[in-house]
Length: 392
Image (cartoon, rainbow, N blue to C red):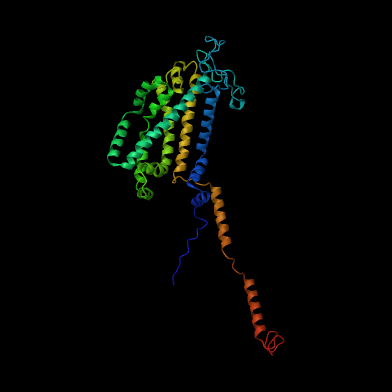
């Protein structure tokens, strides 16, 4: 006779972290699981909301191109009533009383004015626009370069891998700030877009090595062999089969590259190798006003604050994406959730276990059976052979 070992029944005392997480993602696709994990990351959500607010404020306040904004001053406007000798151009932004201020107020110059009377709020918004544009263009260019080099090297291997990786190692050997300064000096006079494009051709090396490692692993999988046997071309295998399976690390690394791009542009502009006049960037504003650090410190507060906020927000978004795409990252449930799961498991085990008969139930069954047996076997009884209900 074949003996079947029943599956082990979990005890109420064992941990419930895996059970809680598996129950939350049961029946969901991989994309929905990643989205749910990302939305449960508080830092990523806060970073995304703050970055969206900064972008909306920067592009709507002073406008973009020929589209006007709601702010009354342009970055280069100089009010006629401004007295450069007697007026220090202090910020008119007032904090609420519960933060120690005199009351919430906006004023004509919330971020103050510089020595020429130009509005710092308008200039800071234009600098934020520049940082966001450079961040986006550099991220796209670096992603395209890194994916192309890493995918070709990881898929073809051999001589192709050697040539592309040695070129990548050559670019890595040069200090990023040095090569960025040289290229920024050459392209800074051509405008922000050309500068961002050129700098994007420098920061792709880390992504290329990451994509190469992913493709070296994916090219040995069964679905790649099946696609190759089915007659799919190398381009189709790379773009349709392998690249979608490597998008998780690519998205995470690209987000972190965009954060580094903000700091790189600000550093180069501060050193004078980045954005040139008449364009404005946050790093260039810090460089232009560095001689006023003692007398007008608000000229540094706002550009520096926006650099930090943008970089931190992108970093938080990158951390959230990394946790969402990494299956080894698990969110440990709270003690209350674990207690609820343990109680639910106890109730399910109790409901699945059949109730045992009590002593009174057993005694009642025995008495009824004895009465039925005696009535059916006795000859003179109602159920006997000679009784009223028996056989004659």
